[in-house]
Length: 272
Image (cartoon, rainbow, N blue to C red; front, side):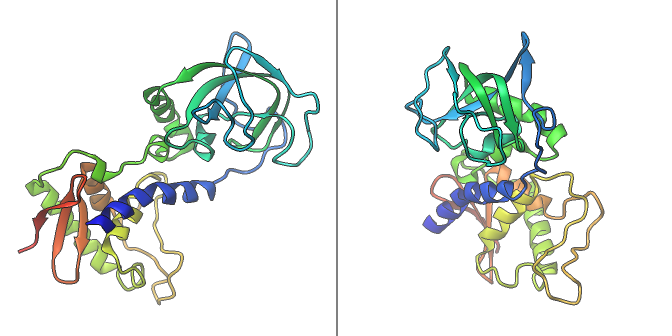
């Protein structure tokens, strides 16, 4: 049971790695990349800080309602250089972690924009601190534009932190669907994966990208080329993702399927 708890928590790290690999194309000018929102003529973005108001990477101590100016601002090509960094909502996952704080940042002066995660400015002032609910709503509002479930990238679902779920008939049907799909692609997709719980982690992560219409396992060397048979636009592993969001984690020991739920990964259903 302890291993199930560790694996469910590891989904957060998996999401961070995947989204780091989805960095958008670099943009070289201030007007070339998505930049936040504008109120009263000032551009506003977001700034992530540690709990003590220091920046996560440089340890610079900030105060709210105070303009900061970088005298030796670097307008060159080095991604990490002199300047104050802030991002729009779709770049927040680069630095945001549980326990860190998020502030609205007003910026002005020179800027160097690389992509949504790397934007530095000559002048910056922090204003309002955002709550988790405000951050989540901003992420939801941006999801149609960015093409993935940004709110769950920032706040991924850990099923074992949800209230213990009692499986319904519909849940058992979804489990059987998941078992069928998993068996049908075992040779090409999960041949090297021993722990069935990791399969659910993968299924959940894949569900965050609804704009992908055709799924294929890139590491497959079988005759099928890794192609997974499914209707275009229909996510083939949705049943496992639905169970995950319900707070139900499937496991399979080679003989029986089980569903686990609650903070101790209690077995709430097992195949007879």
